[in-house]
Image (tube, rainbow, N blue to C red):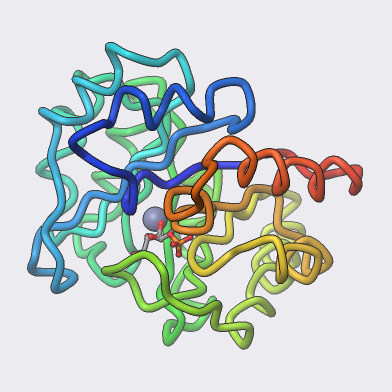
Length: 220
Ligand code: DX5
Ligand code: ZN
């Protein structure tokens, strides 16, 4: 499980992250530029600060225009995975190659309205795909279940080329819909507000963990 800090209390980020140590596998950092998405969140400065307070892998989700400009800064800040959006991938090949050349996992995200055919030309350049199940920009939205079919589509597309593609589902995942998301084949789930708006963050994360552990085959 990748915990998104988007709805965490940023005045208490250290203790918020400490709450989920040992329960979340990965920390999901939602970077937004106020251009690709209406919201503006944080940049490499915050990623670097977070790097200094946790050993969890950092899954940096770039919801930005021209992501190729930022790969180096987030890599140097301590990112382990960096995903960019296919809708902002005019220099996508350059960005994805850069991520991999730095030894990081390269991901490509697609919005609910974007079809999987847009991903085909990038499949050999990525380690994971991100199926957005909310319109990106804000946490706390409801899961768009119509997007879940893309998980299988992407796996079949990659499988056809003999590849093994991990698929992360991002947006609106909570305990109540997690079994369905897992049945659709997600390898990694991002969970944000259902953890960081819960009174007891750790208990909320443990509940998610418990559901995932009941299903073999889940990666993270
Ligand atoms: C949305 C972000 C997601 C989302 C996850 O643009 O990419 O990571 O915030 O948070 P919840 O689980 O609250 O949807
Ligand atoms: Zn995200």
